[in-house]
Image (cartoon, rainbow, N blue to C red; front, top):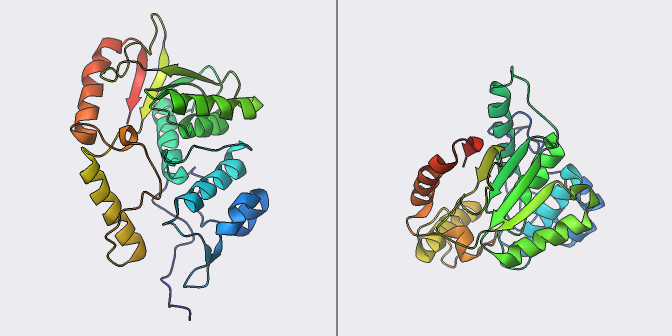
Length: 264
């Protein structure tokens, strides 16, 4: 039995005008280009093709399909349990940074590999550099405190030759530092970008996940399932997002002559 569905706008107007994901997902095209997604696609209660957003593997395969279809990365994977961020939202970060750079460049967005960004906490997914390189040709340095995550990104680069020389990886060995030991002497970046740990504890992260899934399902759920995954250092830190950003602001003062713009 099909349920009466809400009217959906033709475009997701809350997304940036240049964001390629403003239209609803075309699962016919996505599964054609990424057959790994196909087993996870079925008709929902409204009769539309969709995936089960409660299923972490389905969410990962959707991301894989979007990265293949829109950002030309044909071989992409992340280890189980690592953060699998929603692609449309991450694309918005990149497009708004492009607007910032354009605003100080005679309203012309600078493109090409000479534009260099620092992705703080690149994770195992490398989503920011992948999107930034595909959309604007930018190059990146990606830092992380997790060697396993960095090794996974190394494999993504190895499997996609066009990313070679476009993403450099650096391990942060001191978890209390954000820029120190990563930005080298006399090195300059056009911007830094970061998706900081949002929560202040595991309990806070579980509560946030529970609220999100309840909204998705439109009924109360008591078992938090991290459908987008995430290791503890990707999801929470002491003081949560606010303290992380305040630390970033404080530490950025030491590198004010090395970075043009900071974005979180």
